[in-house]
Image 1 (spheres, helix red, strand yellow):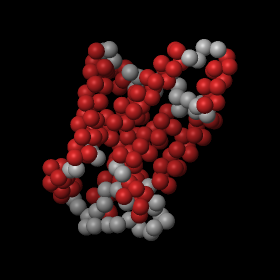
Image 2: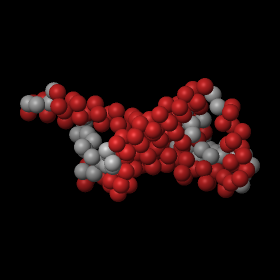
Image 3: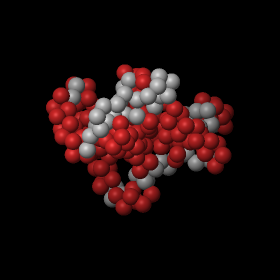
Image 4: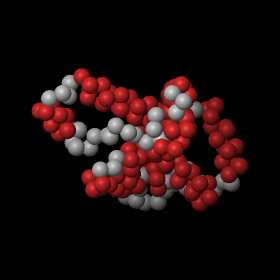
Length: 197
């Protein structure tokens, strides 16, 4: 997957979950017993009303932000440490700890978006990286310069599978809708400052 699929699909999923949650709060959670049931169902780990969408966007790209430079410089493989379950397990554990200790959900959302990156990259097809360090070292190829990596990427784009192309298009549409929402609400400055939509 490329930029639009990771950011757009993750952003769309978080926005959809936030919308479903706010609709369910309006419709069925009115009595005290329903509130207790809803809290139990969500495992006391519900998202707050405010979601910092900047964290969603950065979290959705975090494995590539870390691994692509490492891959270009050292490994010749753009999927390494941050594309592993271990890395994402540590992030989610920190997010859960911060949520229960300080009641802040930002890092938890950030870490879940990073873990979602692994699903979009279909990392189960690469168990050496996914289950690192259990299967040993990462598969490495020759290291590329940055320009060499860009040239390699340009040749790969036309050869992308159909489902990758569809994911990129859907992600791009989600990003355009998000940007349109920011522009119509005149909230670009608020988004940049606070991450709020």
